[in-house]
Length: 248
Image 1 (tube, rainbow, N blue to C red):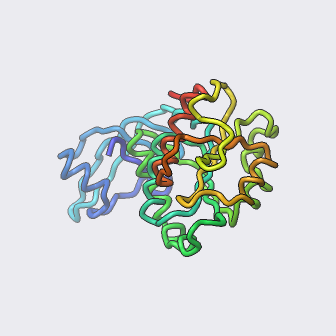
Image 2: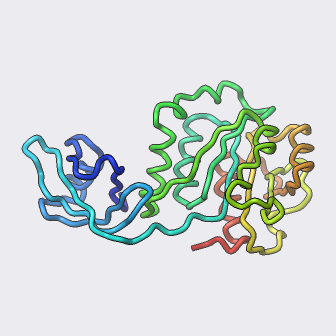
Image 3: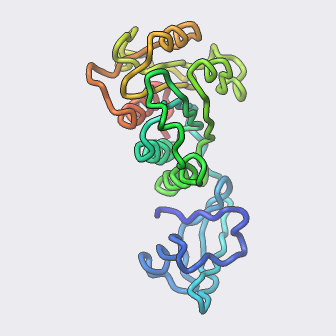
């Protein structure tokens, strides 16, 4: 762990002996009472943590002192098709680690329908993966996360317009190596925020491609190879960070 994160309701309370943060501090970092480390409050400040007390039952009480504000999220929103739960967990973790502002999970015509029933979305697993990514990045924030039944519903809702009301200011991209209109590698640099849609490994249906086109999305290829969805997500996010001057 590169930072110890506490939730608001955990402030002033002891972390259990078997909590992974307790184990990391005492077993991995070998901290004693009075030991200091990098810490923060999920969604809030970042600063220095301190072990105030190691209790007889092995639990620990820690405090956080600091006023550092978290770095701003990237102006990058990712829409991702449902994939296998193990892949989805990695996608959440890695996109959170990169600092994207929001992740939209969408049903697709050619995606496996059973993937939508994963317990990861309802048992806290998705949130844990997002937090894991933030911890790796020494961040205290995690991306917003939403679920949509299909591409049409997502496009009709246009969630990227809620904070920035004009869709015209956004760079709208759909990754597509079958019926691409151009290449990501030849996209001109821009300061506009980006919205990127990445489909399932079977790709988009022609119906979905038409919907993207009608909504002003540019379909771009990242090469001739059919990438795994998790690979395509990270590659597209990295390229978008470079093209939109979104690196930090």
